[in-house]
Length: 88
Image (cartoon, rainbow, N blue to C red; front, side):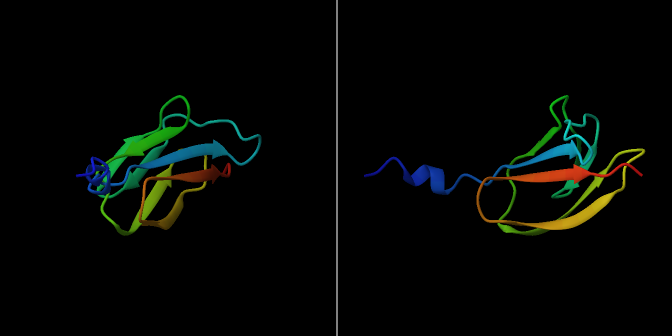
């Protein structure tokens, strides 16, 4: 029996990395809504969502003084989504 079988049943983890379009700095306290949850990004601009289903899911990225971004992410495996926010 192989022990690698258990990893196939681990739901994907999706990490959003939010940076500023002008300069590329990480942006903290950005509200990322994905898979029915809203999380604020860390000081490093990261919001991590675990137990994500295999599906195409909408997301919204909102921060005051920046243009809101709305799109979808097709989830098949653990992955990162890089978001570049433009000042409004």
